Length: 445
Image (cartoon, rainbow, N blue to C red):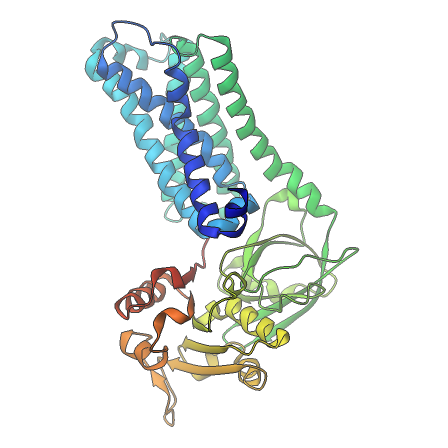
């Protein structure tokens, strides 16, 4: 079994899913060891079960967001964060349904909402629910509410700790199901693990990052309002990464501030002594990249990401599809392949607005001398003498350039969500196996 898990990414991913489901229902399995109080009825017991499942799901969110490399490597951090969002919403619904069933079956329990006169265990339940509601609202409507990312991230952690801690206090206070000492110890252990994950992310990991700083070596302008940020490790050897992966960057401030941003490496995975990141100036932080002088201190947390060709060494070749700044991780794949002397065929389909917007245009063209590389530029606003592809990357365009034997290659897509959705749909209609299609999303926040 260990050999299977070590060599099969699918088996490892399946094992993590089974573990997640197991820990979700573990509280119910523990409760079944001893019979519940008599005479309470099905709906009350069902409500209690929902409460424990919701609390377990809330506690598991800390593991999902802790950037555990072994978990992240099985799916990619963007998929994990999407799963975190969905399961958090499920936990929210379950937690709300739990008291609603009680109010329906036993209407007199509505008095527990009278905060001044309610017992402390009921007060903790109300406060936990309010914290959870605030967490969900500020997450879903963060941008409409114009909440800056860094304050939101801090408040998100505080609200999550309050929701889980107060929820656990409520469960212990009820006592009917956790009256046995060892059951209380089990839940206390779950809470302590969740707390440790918060401490590790907020304190331990930043402290470890301070031991391995980087210095800005160069900030170079590129086409398409993109800047290449080049970092060199200071006092250490840096880290190795697989082409296509990314890292979280903290620039010119302490890593304890938690003001970090994810960017894909655009340089070769064979050269950890100089890490390059392609950054498009579209926001407050990214627009200031050009202003950081050489010697500015930086810190990195990485590498992360499953969007890498290194996982598919048995592939006959690769089709790389990029839109705009989505070329960054794909550029790393191409540069690394060239340095390794990879003789497999590569096809790059690169969509941009104009000819002058094509980031790394000259560098990509130079790679044709070192790789078996076919380049297809797609322009929405081409020059008058343009003879190449125009418009958008659609099914008809893809059919002209991808190989007839669709399952022999792996397809990597990095672009804005709309383009990725359309390309993914087109590849499916062209009978490309879903296991051969890999996507990388821009926004992880």
